[in-house]
Length: 329
Image (cartoon, rainbow, N blue to C red; front, top):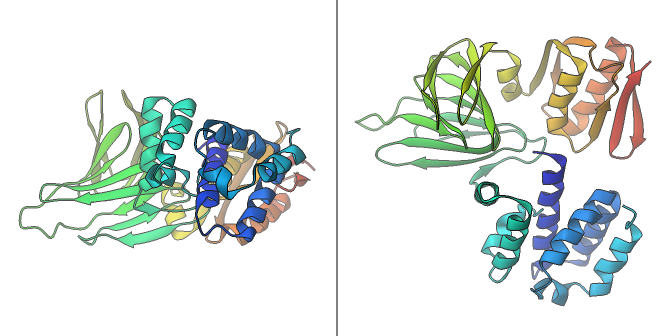
C-alpha cells in the first residue's frame, strides 16, 4: 500500500467516524489532531470533503466552520475501514464518487473488497486463525483476506498483504482443493506450508513444505516445489531462487536480514510502522545480517533502529515526529 493509499484509507475512515451518530467530542478532537499531524492529511481530506458535498449527513453533524478552521491551520500543507461507507445508506454514492475519482474500475472493486474482508490486520499487527478444516492461516501486517468454503472448493482470497498457510487435510469425504486467489493468480496447495504476498498488480510465493501450483490468469501454470519461490503477475511467473527464511520468519514475529542491503531491510521494516524512514544514498547499500523481533512493532522498532546504529556506521536522525532519516555516522 502506498502512502497516498494509506492516507486515503485514514481520511475515509474518519469520514465514517464523523458520520456515526455516536461520534463524540473526543472523536472530533482526535480527527482534528490527525488533520494537523501532516499536510498530506489535509490535502486528502479536502478531496473527500469536496466529493461528499452533495450529501449533507456530515455537515449536519460537524459544523462547517469546525472542518474549515482545522483545515486552515494546516493549509500550507480513508475510512476506519473507510469504505464501510458503502454500507451506510445515502453515503454509498459519496463513497462511489470518491473511489471512481481516485481509482480505475479494477481498483474500485479491489478497494471495496478490502473494506469488507472478513479477516484483517492493522498496520503492525499479525493474527493467526484456524479455519474450519484445520488449516492454519496467519496474516501479516496490513493484510485483508476472505475465506469461502463450499462442497467443491476451499478458497482463501488474499485481497492485500501477506499470509502464511499451513494446509490441513480436507475433512470432506471427497477432498476439496485448497486455493489462494489473488488479483492476478490462483495458488493451489499440494499438501504444503507456504507464504503468499500480493497487491493489486503482482505477487510472490515461497514454499517451505510440499508444493503449490501457481496459475496466473494469462499464462500457463507452474508447479513450485518446497525450497523455491517465485514472483508472478497476471501474465508471467518469474523464478526467484531459494525460499528465503525471511519469507516465513515474520509469522513467528521475526525479521531476518540475510546479508541484504540496508535499504531493502528498511523497506520491509516500514511495512510495520506509520513512520516514514528515509535511507540516504550513502547508507543504502550497506549490508546487514541479523534476526530482529517484530512481534510488538511499537516497542520493537526503536530497539531495531538502535541495533542498526550499533552494527553499522549510521545514525538514525529524527527529522519530524513522523519522519526518520538514516545518514552516515
